[in-house]
Length: 134
Length: 134
DNA sequence: GTAGATGCAAACTTTTTGCAGACTG
DNA sequence: CAGTCTGCAAAAAGTTTGCATCTAC
Image (cartoon, rainbow over all chains, first blue to last red; front, side, top):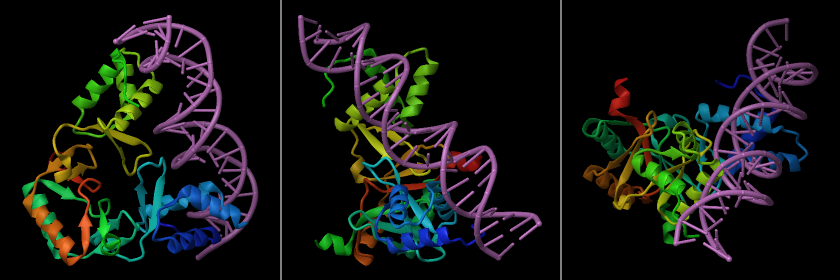
C-alpha cells in the first residue's frame, strides 16, 4: 500500500498537488497539465499514484457536486488521523481542527447515539472567516 | 423540466425511492432491483427520471466518496436543514442527528475557530451500532 | 392526435486493469 | 537483481443520447 520507490513522475505529481493545495484538482486536470508541459505521465500512473496517496492519507479525495469526477487535495501536515478537517466551500481551504470540545462531542455521539465517528473520512464543510467577510 | 405524464415506471421508481429514504440509493441499484422483479424498466428511463426528480427537488443527489457513482435520496417533508446527518460507512444508513451538544460545538467552532458549519453539506461518517457489533 | 415517455443500443466519460518493458534501491 | 513502477491499450463502470415506438391525456 505504501509507496516504495521515488520516481520522477511521482515527484512531479505530488509537487503539482502541493502547488494547488488550495483548490480542487481533478485527475483529468493533472493528466492534461502534464500533457501540456511535455512531461509524459500516463493517466494510469496518475490514477494509481493518486489512489496510493489517498490510502496513505497524504491527499484527500472529494466528490464535488455538479461534477462527475473526483477531486483531490494535498494535506500538508502529519498525523491527520487524530483530528477533523474543516473545508471552506468558497475558497476550498482546509483547516486542521485541533479542538478538545469536538473530541467531547465525538465521545458524546459514541456513548449516547451509539455511533463511532470516522475522523479521516469526515469533512466538516462550511464558510471560513475570510470568505464570510466578503 | 417538470414531469408531465404519470407512468407505471415513474410510479414504481418513486415508490422505491420512498421505501429507501434512509439510505443512499444508486441508479444501478434501482436498475438491478427492477431487473430482479420482472418489471422491465430500462436504465435510460431510470437516469432520465432521476434527473427530473433532482431538478424538481423531490430527490437529492449526493456524490459519495469511495464510490464512483451518484447516490439519490428521497426528501421527506421533514426539515433536514436544521440538523446534521450521520452516515454509516458499512450499511449506508443515514441517521438524523438531533443533538443539542452538537449544536454547542457548532457555536464553539463559529466563535472560537471562526468557521460557520454547513449542516446541509456536511455528512459525519462513521460506524453505526449495528455494524460495530459485527 | 400529439407531446411526452420508453427501451434499446451506441456513444461518451471517468477510472481500472493486464502486461511487457523500464527503473529504483 | 528483485521488487516496483510506468505507459499503453483494452476493459470496466457510470451516465447520456439518438431514434423508432409506444402511451397518457
